[in-house]
Length: 250
View 1 (spheres, helix red, strand yellow):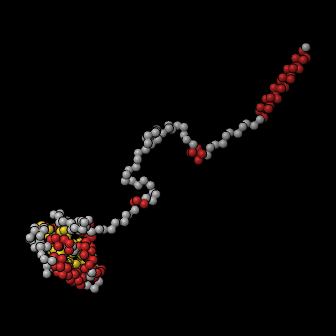
View 2: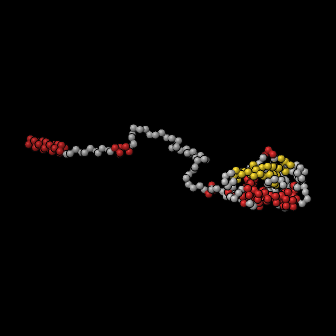
View 3: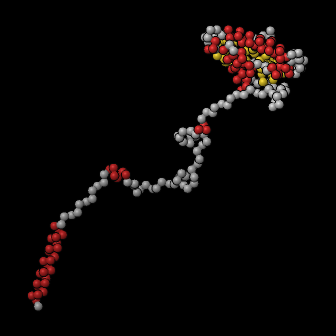
């Protein structure tokens, strides 16, 4: 009975020694590699608290852009392109039935598009030595027949007023020199304080009109020298100015 116990103890001691030797001879596991500086910089730090929520991150909609701010860099729609101006039409002189429209007491203005366009026509007529170009700015024969208290007003208009106007346009063209078409127009000066309402029978007229005298065509000649031409007399018809005498009453 004693021998087997001794043998068993010996075997236990031998097994314990083998286990101890195996544990001491096994290599220790290698430590994990250190993180590089770039890798650690890309990782979020755990010590910083999360950023508070802002109005942009809330569920409420973002404010609309200002009406004056550009909405995008995309090309502008076709509707924003410059519009082609419609052809200019002279104010009508006759009604639909062909009758001449009556005079009004509306005072003319030099700020209307009609007046501006007509001044250009008058200056072009002088530059090109062609009085017919300024015909829309000359007092219409239809109105002259209504205004003038004389026999055969249309004949007086044709052989006196219009012929004198043609003569004056040719005279002014000659004053511009050899390079006449290079002259430029600045403005027409109208002496507003001298505008008067001419009552019937005051100038051989049957009906009244506004009149202004001694206006001026102002510009520059081709060589840059100042240009000033008299516009002797204009009278009104239905709220617009018309030339009656360009240079003198003769």
